Amino acid sequence: MRRSILLLGLLPFTAAFLGASVAISLAVPPVVAAQAATPREVRANSFSLVSDDGTVQARLSVVPGVGVASLTFLRADGSPATSFSPSGVTMFGSDGSVTVRVGRCVPSADFPTCAGDLPPFSSLQYGPDGAVGLLPSP
Image (tube, rainbow, N blue to C red; front, side):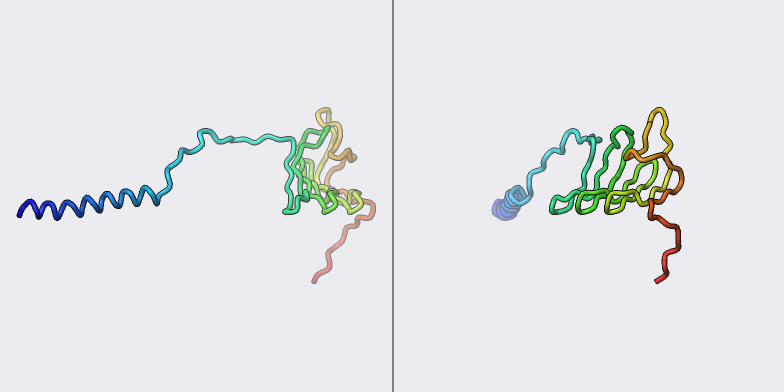
């Protein structure tokens, strides 16, 4: 009698334990090791931001001959619309002419020209058709 109580209690427990172990090993994906070393730095001469169709929308690069970084937003035709650099902000018209420059660029021995081979400037500079005025209120 004692043996049958022990057998009737132990057998279902063992079967349940083995069944759960098999079910968990099939249902849970295996544990994988993490990558050993992830890069902390990515280096390149330029980075391009592209739209879904592959059109370049913006470019982060180093200005040739000047050696400073520049973030340039581009129009659909690839021409620059606005450029940000340590010397300031430059906005371009659809024909490529400079419409507004804000900031300061004074050539030195280290940087003999301003970005885009533009002349030196300080503060605010408008293009030939630029004007100062208030925006109309809505």
